[in-house]
Length: 117
Image 1 (tube, rainbow, N blue to C red):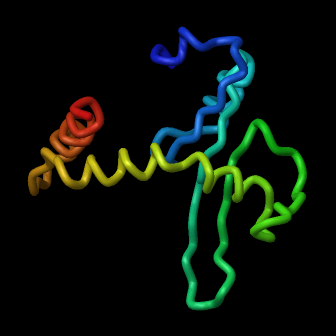
Image 2: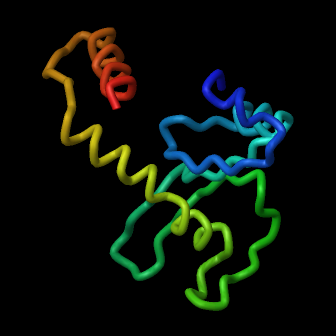
């Protein structure tokens, strides 16, 4: 939330991964003029259609995109998620995590990976 202060009220879009998302966070960002779009859960199955749960403070209908025949929220997420994918790839490539059974160290390594990028 602190990193977003310079863009409060500018109606910017924040597309993020499910690791940084909660409904109260979405509400507080919307009050400050930031639009949030995120993937909450993804269930891949053997069938052609996949189950996706998304959270958006921008989209309020299930209209389809004319080009891809996907719901508009998913088409918009796919267009704007490149930063999320790059972050995930870099955090896996340059990971500082070590094998440990202690949960405080797991959290520390996760925070270190996030801050290091």
